[in-house]
Image 1 (cartoon, rainbow, N blue to C red):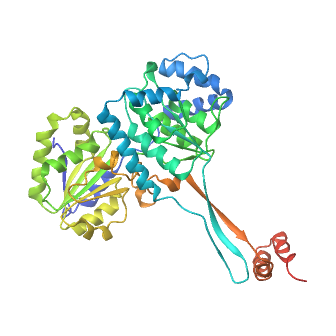
Image 2 (image 1 turned 90 degrees about the vertical axis):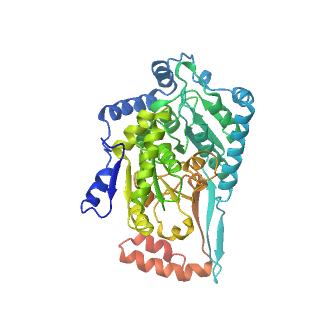
Image 3 (image 1 turned 120 degrees about the horizontal axis):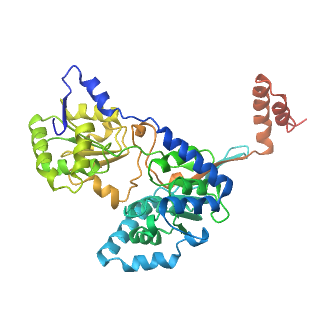
Length: 433
C-alpha cells in the first residue's frame, strides 16, 4: 500500500477522489453523548458533590471539597520558577508576541451625531468571566493557555477561570507556569465534561462563566456542544489540517516535515501538498519514507498520511489556490518564491503562512497570531480565535426631539404595515401634536 495517496487534477475522477479524501465521519458517538448528558445533568443538579464524585472516579483524586481542588497561585509561581531558564524564556517570549499581536485586535467604541442631534453608535464591552479548558496530566499544552487566556485578558475580561484534569494528582508544571504568565485568575484541578458543566452552570465554589474556550477530548467537545446557548463557546474543533502549496523549489525534507507536523496530532489529521511538479512530488514522497522512521509518533503519522493525506499534482499555482479554497484548510502554507502574488486568490483558510521559512509550527507556538483555528472546512465562514471573541457590541441609539419627528413617522408607518399597533403608537406618542 502506498505511503500516501497521489492525485492528479487531470484525472477524470479527481473531484470524486478529492471529495472522498476530505470526507470524515462526523457521526457523534451515541455512548459518549449519553454519558456526557448524564454528567452535565448531575453537575447542574448537585454542583460540587458531582465534581468531587467524578474527580474521584476519573482522575483518582480524593478531595473533601472543591476548594481543595483549587490550585493556589503560589504553586503556579513555583512551577514557573522551577522551569529551566531556556524553557521559561521561551514561554515568556511567546506570551509577549501573542500579547503584542492581539493588542492590535482590540476594538473601540464609536458614535456619530446626525444633523438633527440624534446620536448613533456602538459600545464595546468585554465579557465578565471566561472559562478555559486545558488538557492535563502527561499532555503538556502550555501554548493553549497562552493562546486562549492572553486574548481574553487583552480584551479586558475580568476573570479567567482555568480547569485542567490532574490524573492521579499529576499537575503539569509548564501548564501552571503558562497560567502565571498569561494572567489567569483561578485554576481548578478538574477536567472532563464535569468541568465544562461546572463552568457553564456554576456550583457553590465555581462561578458560572459567559464563554468556554480551549481544546479537550471527545467528552469535552460533546459537553461544549451541549452547553452552547447557556454559555458561548469558541468552536468545536475537528482533526488538525495542513495544506501546502509549493512551487517545487523548497527543500523536500522541509515539506515532508511540515506534513508530519500535523499528521502527528492524530490518525484523523489531514496533510495535503499541491504542486505543479510531479518530480517534486516524487522527491517529497522519498523524504517521507526517509524521515518517517526518525519520528517518535511514526505510527500515528503513517496512518494519517495513508488514510487522509495526499500529494496532488496541479497544472498551475493558480489552480492550486482554487483547490485550496475548496478545501478551506485550518493551516495553509504558501511555500513559493513570491507568496504575496497568490494571496489575493486565497479566500478560505484559518491561517496563511507565507514563504518558505514560515513553517506552521511557528504559528502553533510563538509567531503571535492565534493557533485556535477553524477546521473541517469551517474557515469558509469563521475565523481564528481573537480578542473580538471576548468582546461584545451594544448598539447605542440616542434620538433627539427633532429626530423623533422624522423617525417616529417612519416607524409608525412600517409598524402599521406589520400589524403591530403598539409599536406604531409608541413611536407616534412622541410626535409633536
